[in-house]
Length: 332
Image (cartoon, rainbow, N blue to C red):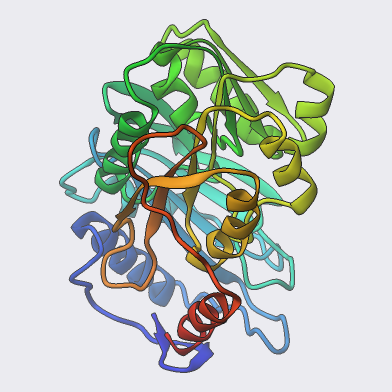
């Protein structure tokens, strides 16, 4: 935890009512180990020190846990005792592996410069809507599994029961949505910029015996140009800043009957709806999924259509509305 308004100051807490109990147990054991060994922490101003982060991930539906101690390379430390301590804990879940990652970057982020497997495996498995996924320490996987299942069910509902020939899943990450939608299409193309995520997606598809998926690594706009295939429908789940204007124009030029837009930042979605509406689409359905309880962040799922039903939910977005949303985000 950080001191309020002071992001350089870390506050030690004995417990947390939000975090999983196993996370708290592993954190406490790691702190006790560090104190016994008198291990220094990295000073953000001088860059000196050893300890940086503790990364813990757990499969909600499998209970499998991965623990990764992140340090600098400023000293050689025997972590055998750390392994015994963590492996000997009585946990509700099952410990899958213990890792040690070295990170000397000045950025206050967990950057994987080198990772050593200390015990067990370098991955764990979790399940989402009946599908099994391999998750590593640094691969993207929604932290709120229950919320993710609600989100993916909503996407599936918006796609509907009609079987489409070709479906694009854009900004697909490790291909969770791609695989969930595999039974709704003859061929699904998952496109993602991060190559590691694409490799993980391919492995997960093999794990689930799904063979009508093609995963491609690269910039979404460039890949769809090179692919030269016109989809019958697409699902887009871009990063927080939304879709690049050129890529958005290309997608709208497909003139698909409908598409699903998933947004984790409502102001980015709001800024793009004007162009989407100008292209002849209207907002047919929309839902918010509370993926991050006790925060102001939600995932918004929209079904945008150029069909002509009897009625629409049509938003007339004005620029003052957009800036009002931006100002509200800053205040929060």
